[in-house]
Amino acid sequence: MSLNQVRPWRNIYRRTSRQIMVGNVPVGGDAPISVQTMTNTPTTDVFATVAQVQAAADAGADIVRVSVPDEASARALKEIVAESPVPIVADIHFHYRRGIEAAEAGAACLRINPGNIGSPERVREVIKAAKDHGCSIRIGVNAGSLEKHLLEKYGEPCPEAMVESGLEHIRILQDNDFHEFKISVKASDVFLAAAAYQGIAEATDAPIHLGITEAGGLMSGTIKSAIGLGNLLWMGIGDTIRVSLSADPVEEVKVGYEILKSLGLRHRGVNIISCPSCARQGFDVIKTVEILEKRLEHIKTPMSLSIIGCVVNGPGEALMTDVGFTGGGAGAGMVYLAGKASHKMSNDQMIDHIVLEVEKRAIALEAERAAEAPEAAE
Image 1 (cartoon, rainbow, N blue to C red):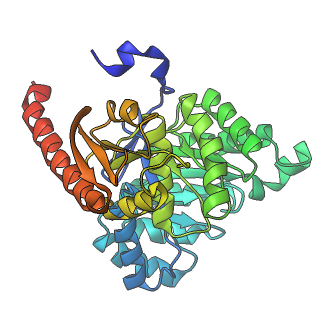
Image 2 (image 1 turned 30 degrees about the horizontal axis):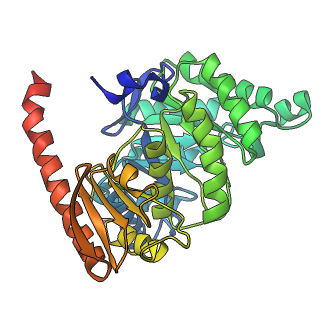
C-alpha cells in the first residue's frame, strides 16, 4: 500500500491533457512534469551556450530553451542542437523566418509569441516548417505583449484577454491540422497568471507550460514562483514548468525541482529536512546544511536527509528519513539510518560521515530499484 493510499490528503489529481513530444521528452498525459530553463549566453557563442545547456542538464533540466533573435543565431542553433544532451526549444520573437530556420536547424520545439510573430499567414508558414521537421510548438501568450485588438477590446491585460489570445492561435494550429502543441499564458503578476492558467486549463486539453514570467531575482523570484506555480500545480494544472529568475539558469532548475519535490510531483536528489536552529542546537545547523547542500549535489537518487539541531524534533524527523543526524550534548549527536537510531558521531567528523552514509544509502536504494525493475516490467 502506497503512502498516498494511506494518506489520501497527499494526492494531487492532475488535469487530463493530451501528450506531445518535445524531442524525446513526453509532455502532458501521465508523463512526469518536466523542468525547463533558458540560456542567457549569446546564441552565436556556441561554446558558451552548449556549456550552459550542459550545466542545466547536469542539474536536472529536461528541456532547455535558446533564444534565436537573428539569422546568425539560427545558424549557430544547428551546432548547439547537435551537441546538446537534452531537447532544445527555439525561442522565436518578431520574425517568423527565425522559426522556419530554427526548425530546419533541428530544434525540438518552437516557442512563438502570438502577439509579435506576425500575421496568421506567417504563423502558417512556421507551422509548415514545424510539420516538415518534426517540431512541436509552444504557443507563448504573455500579458506584456498581447495583440492590439485584444487590448482594445478589454482595455488592459486580463485573464480573459490572455485566454482568448491563446485560443485564437490554437485554432490556427488546428485549422492547419497541427496538434503537437502546448500553451502558456504567463504574466509577472501572480494573480493574473493564475487566473489565466485556470481559464486556459478549462478551455483546452493541450499540455500546459507553467511560468510566472519576469519573476525577479533569486530570492524574490523563487518566492513568487513558488506561490504561483505551487498553487497551480496543487490544483493539478501544469505539465512542464520554467522558473524565470534573474539568476544562473542552474538556479532555475534547482528551484523548479524544489517546487515539484515539495508537492511530491518529482523526486530527484537529496531532500534535506533541517531546522532553522536556535539556542538548543548541539552544532552549527545553518553552516552544516550549507556545506551538505554543496557536497551532496552529485547525488541524483531520490532520498531524504534530516539535519536537526536538538532532540526536541530531531528523533521524530529522523524516523521518517533515509539518513538523519540529531544534535545532542558533549560535542556529539546521533546518526539515524533508514529511520532507526544507529550510532553516535562527533560533531567535528559529522559532515564527512553524513556524506559517506548518504552515498552508501544512495547505492543501496539504486540496487533495490534495479532489483524491482523486472517485476515492474512484468
